[in-house]
Length: 348
Image (cartoon, rainbow, N blue to C red):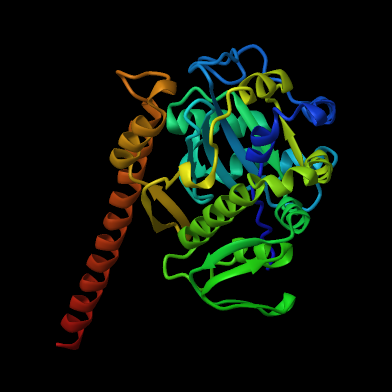
């Protein structure tokens, strides 16, 4: 299986940010990993990082489809996983919106798969594309690679997951039956990457990712695992970079109340799979998406009245593509009919 799934566990940083006996270790991680800065007008409107909602943090999680997390190549990899996360430290609520990697959106002025944005322009283009797509003021990012899920699960001693389908990955000798079970790091990684057994294809895989995230958060919030934090931070240092300042996490962590998987609300960008020019895409349902974004992240909307001009551009382009496809099909059928009529006339 060539695609490498990346699971996100940045919530672990947030959950444990207020444990002072390891504060210096966390600070070291933040200083080492905060290397990309957004300046000037890189992100468009609202690019100055400021906290819109008190005691709350909004950030985009980007999972890379590469096992190489060092050097310039990191900026050129596609994102295999994209999740917008909002954590409210006062209520303990966590909202997460998964964006299918094949979502057809405007990328650098043309319609393309959203996971290509990072490949074309690194973090800045990935962030700008997502901001424009969702019409949200997103300033913070967390970027991780696929080693995260395997290593963090193994440090925790496994996670309990209710596997919904039979999972068979012959090359890694992994065979999981449906039902609740404890997964080790390798099993969790392959389960999160697996999609062959789902009738809904990649959407099934996205739901599996959400199950893994919930299981990780449940395990991370157990008191017995606090002692494992230094080991977890070693994994974080190697596989994560972010522009969330340590000072922000430390400040908000003082207000943490009952964060846990039972307070997680997960959604997927509504839409449907479609082939356009022999390429598979995921076409977002704009009406449903706009309503969902307003419900989940309304405080962060960039333009609450006029909406996003990209919405109309996308819808019009999608409609034109479908219209052109139908026209081409009709023309093809007309040509075939004319040809048949000519043949019939010749036969007479």
